[in-house]
Image 1: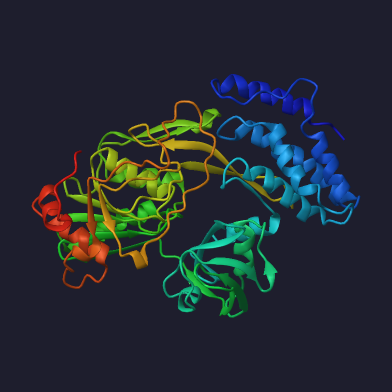
Image 2 (image 1 turned 45 degrees about the horizontal axis):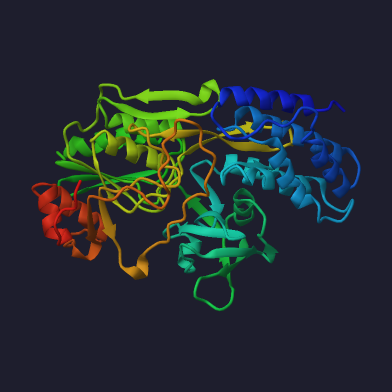
Amino acid sequence: MKRPFPILRALTATCLLVAAGTSVAATPAGDDPLAPLQSAYLRSVPPGEQADLYQALFETVLARVQRSYATEVDPSALSAAAIKVLEPLPPGAGDPAEVFRSAINAALATLDPNSRYVDTRSYTSERSDSGASFGGLGIEIEPGDGAIRVVTPIAGGPAARAGLLAGDLIVRIDDQPLAGISVSDASSRMRGQPGTPVSVTIRRAGMGQDFTVSLTRETIRRQALSWSMEGDVLVLRLRTFSGSVAAAVEQAIGEATAGNTPKAVVLDMRGNPGGLLREAVTIADAFLSSGDIVTLRGRTASNQRMWKADAAELLAGLPMLVLIDARSASAAELVAAALQENGRAKVMGQRSYGKGTVQSTYSLGDQQGALKLTTAFYLGPSGRSVQRVGVAPDIEIVTPASTQEVRRAPAPAQVPAGVVLSDANKPQTPAARVAQERCALQPKVADPVLSCAMAYLHAPDFEAFVREFAGASLPAR
């Protein structure tokens, strides 16, 4: 077998030249960061064709990481993280595919929470699930505390009807523990043919013991965008940046303005987990006539790019408000930052999630799965990254203590030179804070945050809104 070690050493040296100013040292000449890992892997699995295939896949994955990760990486550290998983395993007893997946994902997890290996079954499932509908439980999930955390149950879905809550930990699916498995694997286990049963074991804060809920999978339909007229205000509810949602936004505005003359517009991205970079850039551009939209910073030429707004603008001149919360992430944060920092819109709600990275997917070949890798950080027009700190609202809506969500930002990741990354514990301070119950409910508006948005848009100006609803003098800005 061709040995990969000179390739890794050469890549390391090249990375040091490209990413000047980083503190990671090159692997000393003559050292072989991959040999101990491959040796530990072969010890842990029975010999054969599968073992050889996955032994070689370590080389493929780590070489791709060396070439394409957003910042310089230390191959020795990656190898050590994988070996730590392999060492406790009994000799020759592990399934080659399962052992490889556990080891390589342990290595990738040291980079950031979003870089991971996806096996063939999960990769195929993820691609098929990117359509308009799928069989599942209606739940958004993320990694959390050795299990899988519920980000939000989709309204009307099986999980929501069964009483699952944001923040719940799913510790088992059909008696299979979830410790150590990826989000994609957990998602694959929960999805399936509509009408089929599945049970999930839940660990909830404040409860003494876990409990199990029996559910039936249903067809979950994605609705990326919906719109409504709330009086003279056009409300665009944007739930994801998948598919051709930018074209859907343009169509919705055309339909809304054909029979109405809106006086203002609300872009509601609460709970939006993100999606495609191109869709986010296009939507931000649609509401801007000038200025920077976003800048990518990575190590490769394809991940060094800036987008600027063109002169065309939808709903030009209309007052605009963007709604976000602690679950608004990634592409949603990109759009919010672009509109806020260009002065096009005020942002209302809670500080967003704090995921300022871009992932690329690399197929690893037939029946070998794929690598999802963080390849760039993005910066808003001001040059700031939202990584770890999120987008701070201009007007923070303070919810009752009983309904407040705990904000769980991604774990720190390496940051390339030139990225302005604020202290995670010191986000920008909102210009005003308003308790949501102080906003008088507008006619036919049951959503208290949207009610606050209506109150703001109908106020004579920002200061008048703050005086009436914040009940305090304006903080310094």
